[in-house]
Length: 251
Length: 250
Image (tube, rainbow over all chains, first blue to last red; front, side, top):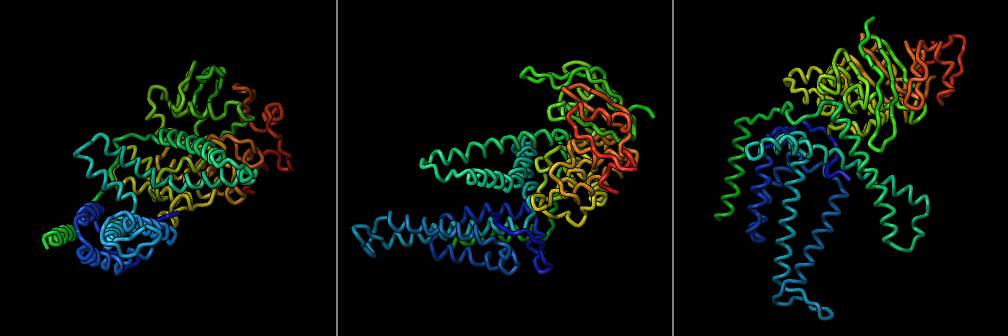
């Protein structure tokens, strides 16, 4: 279940795609944090311009449908939870359960904030090769934990690489168990164990083989780093993004 | 031709006490194509893993171009590139290009040199057009060629392949076999373990048959093939070309 489909950027999209990964990471972090104290109207005013720019740049075109639906379901759940749990002036009361006006506003705020952060993350993933994200994270970690930065970067890369494989392993075990009529077992815990234990074993074996293969290819922490270059345009975008986050806070 | 690999009375005992290898002695000539065959558990994989220091000998010694892998593992890994049986587990990169670059990056090579090697390895294995593809979207044969490209980018003198044809279709086997033969034609030493002698033996200079952790018989394929059945390996049917007809590239 990929968040974004695999595709090459078109020439119209190059501005976003060519932006330095570190700039995108900083803006993702700063804008996400900046959205926390904002109310509903401010959130819309803050979030819409960058999202509109991203949409125009083609960054949202590759978004997968399934994860979007799953995320939408999560948002609905969060919204309803807030509506029903925040006390205030009742809007509707059904069977003793009431939805408050304050709950609706609070639910909309939280859902919109999550949606905003989701889109920021999706734009980052859609417009940045994961190797560049990894190199960017490594670059930020280097002053804090120089020795561990490369290792953390490699771990990030392996996670991205192995997520589809983990799903494939689970699917393979599920099919094998279904072929052996696991559905006829009444105990759900037993059914879960029938799936989880062999899948976990296969994943651990795969991890062992991977470690061996990496060793055979001479893996070590002191590797050639991926080059990252920030152009004047990247710096300009960074400054404009930070300025936008500050302006919204002030207003 | 001088020997590039010299194994002398090599024994390996696993942590659970079972013996993987017992007093294996073997010499492999530079530039030769060697096929190692034997039933499951005969010690083929264990033997290969000593060549680039993934395992250390319990007794005996291994020398690869004069280097002792147990003492100088990184140098040994520069000399010996290894392809594992499960290609999927060997692929590290998020794209084909990144995976091929993984080995040279580990060597700390400058970026232009890495890019030169990656381009050359992708070209050699016919994967240049898939350079930006995610590895999990490749076919079985393409994945195997990707692992080969990853090894080639490290420019080893010796290429060691553990069951390179397992789970591959006809086209996949032919693609991998052609790549291995071209490596030998360049002067590299190629060592392949397999159960399927009919796919590859026609290209081999030597056949090594293993049984219960020992070298049961070794020699020219024409001579050693007679003992294949005793080592749990199916003896292929020979046509008028004899052993040279045992190839899927004809």
